[in-house]
Length: 423
Image (cartoon, rainbow, N blue to C red; front, side, top):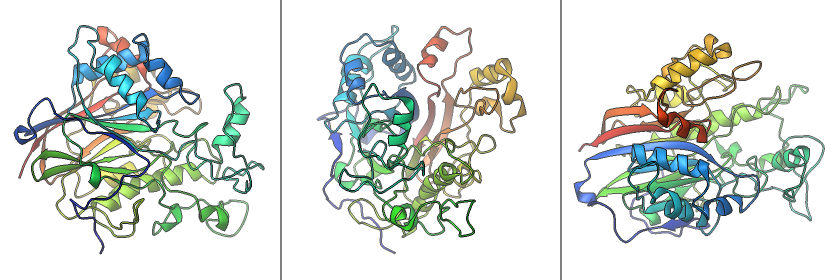
């Protein structure tokens, strides 16, 4: 089995990283950590719009996101739905104009080390001279990102033929922020890993034909990527010789498809990638060609909006349970909130039919008709090796709490877990 060896220097292509000169406290003293994930919905409909919004200190959504972060004060954070730009300008602006500025009377939060990888969303598989891939099978192959004035149909037509749905390259990206140094030369990304290369991949089937797994043509499968954004293994240094592998991703929602369930199946396999990776399986190759998952007894934490509830919603074969029941993952301590219970009770409708505990919900979604209701879809899942979980929670205040207005910045809620570093 080929494995990635920590300390091997190699180029970090097409990614943007800040490695600050100093941190707020010594890595050698770090024994307890607060680790969080937050789908902050800081995505926009056109390239550059997020940077414009963050260039001034007047954006209410960004201010409320920053207030939540200043209240919770994570040491390591994954922000999902934060549009990617190659120079990292947006995350710089967010830090300088919001996170490091007092919000709602709270103290500034400094997370000087950041990593923002390129993502597959909004990246077309087609070229002007060879528009041949029709992934959504709507009868047309598109290659040009739509103009801001485009109709919803035109936006969907372009996004449906991208490696991950998006109306411009980088939409719905993500950023890792850390108080502690990131080992930039050891980061691994899996943006270009092909779906067909996963053993036992749950490739979608065209229900109108007798052939199996034939929704995508062979020419499509030769280029179609597993990750709808990217999967990133980001080693963060806790102390000399000690790291935690931050495993960051944002699988596609298991909806917006048809009876072939191509998005549900892809969501399943995007989540399964981490289950295989932490087990140290050898089939996956990263974007520079190195094969294999984590070495045995590695310290890791899986972070992200996984778009999969273990019991409810539209996911295919409950993929969240591949992680929640994984022998190497500590999932007994379940983050919860009183606000989620209140929301499920007062919103009612489809929430009343759920099998999962409402106190664990992290997404506040529509509740009637075909809508899923509120779900548990955002996760902080530390390894059993190297960590002891001591506390956890979801930032979802009850309506009577003045902080509840901050939570309206996103339809997701921040999830945090406190761990003690062992060994």
